Length: 245
Ligand code: GLP
Image (cartoon, rainbow, N blue to C red):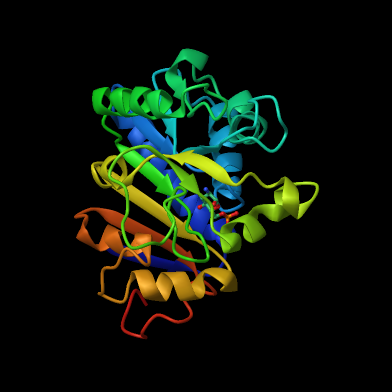
């Protein structure tokens, strides 16, 4: 486990972008796990810049972590639209190489199985993760149990409140999402979790406390041999002095 603490999110994102660039340059068929939310935006801007400067992503395959249930891919708030707006339109990844769960599938269970099947065929080389204020990863919410495979998750009030800023009204935030499970995340060769800002400090301190609990899903990352935690000072502020400084 590596914990890197940076002055601010721009410098942290430059570090994360350089790690991702290495994967894209050196792997013949890199498989990237992608995240949504505000956290990866500076990283995605850097990837677009890399592409403008000549880096090709045409050999890359991507898997997004999750998608809201009930939103069409064309809805502005969907993660399909988010990825197009913030990343895919700027890169040359063939559309057939980009995977995002279909939140409008008539049979959601079949959609979950379809996504797991694809994930089994493509082990993720580098999985990007953000973290929810309650310690969720993807949309794996805290609870008495966690799911191994792709599943439909009922979103907690705190997650819906946190994501309300992306919707016109808080009530418009969907109640459910499809998310990949802990299996696919933990089977990734390398995990890069990014967390910025004071709202993430509690979740980061809990995740790195040494205790593993389904009440804080990100704590399960402590069982993985190759996780890089990319933090800014605010997100790292509750960590013991001895960590990462
Ligand atoms: C959503 C996403 C997560 C993301 C989290 C944090 O719940 N499903 O993948 O990590 O939000 O978002 P943000 O980066 O906006 O704080």
